[in-house]
Length: 307
Ligand SMILES: Cc1cc2nc3c(=O)[nH]c(=O)nc-3n(C[C@H](O)[C@H](O)[C@H](O)COP(=O)(O)OP(=O)(O)OC[C@H]3O[C@@H](n4cnc5c(N)ncnc54)[C@H](O)[C@@H]3O)c2cc1C
Image 1 (tube, helix red, strand yellow):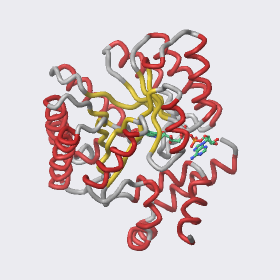
Image 2 (cartoon, rainbow, N blue to C red):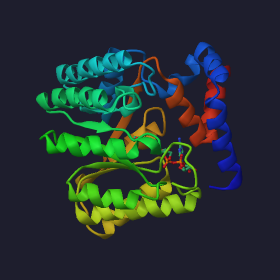
Image 3 (cartoon, protein in one colour):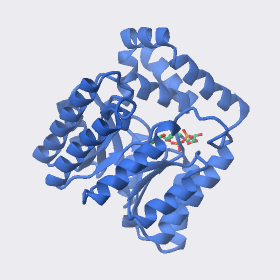
Image 4 (cartoon, rainbow, N blue to C red):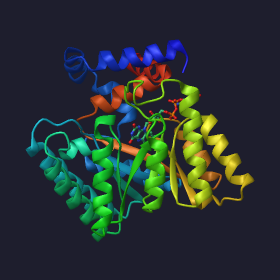
């Protein structure tokens, strides 16, 4: 990451964390976020998923929400996720589920959070579905991994998580998860993390990203590679071809609203592609992370605003 990009990312994440900016954005900015959000409610999102599935793209459905203040909000999210699992089964959508631990109460009460997530995973198991626990910022990394291990120990193996290439600890976490036969989504990492825990330089993050992807592909455990970066996507395609790794041994994942034509192109080339489809009213933190990742996303929003 060059100095300008680093500064842009840090500045945007800092401004976005300001409560005043947040309240203004939530009041006036909903239309702007539309490009990245599949709709306000489950039925909007399921329609978008049907359209994606028709193009050969699978989905992972996310009901937006994180960093809640009261446990009753977590119970509301849990219930919405159970409806979501039922909705996917009813419509026979080709979609699994993504959720955030803080949305289920992790920052408030670990026991309740576990019970909430367990209820969703158990429901998903009943309908033959799979739950991906998104990874949030580093204070929650260990607690999130503990939840996944505990669910697997209880026989709920239809659940996996995400590891972030920017964290120093990830290489070891990857080994532990492979040993436990737990599937991962691998990403660069989206949060503002200090140098004490995370690589600050884009080249280091990419090196580590390739290292952990290679480890997965060589081992043969099914893995999800979530990135819009051609340096990663082209490298994975070449590595898989060179090492005769079949196209169904891994999947590419991208976010709704980003590189949609490329998602369809990859699917047409025979790769497994999954689109992360968020919906719901709590769009602000998700949306500001997208803006921080890429100045072009900000321009796209400004263009939408004036079109
Ligand atoms: C499906 C999915 C799930 C995720 N889940 C998590 C999670 O649980 N936890 C977490 O911390 N992070 C998550 N992330 C976010 C991730 O960590 C990164 O912050 C995010 O993906 C940006 O990194 P990148 O590799 O996509 O490319 P970037 O670093 O954003 O971009 C690198 C290069 O890729 C190309 N590029 C990027 N976007 C575009 C575009 N729209 N059009 C054309 N070229 C483009 C450009 O050349 C750009 O310079 C997730 C990402 C995805 C895709």
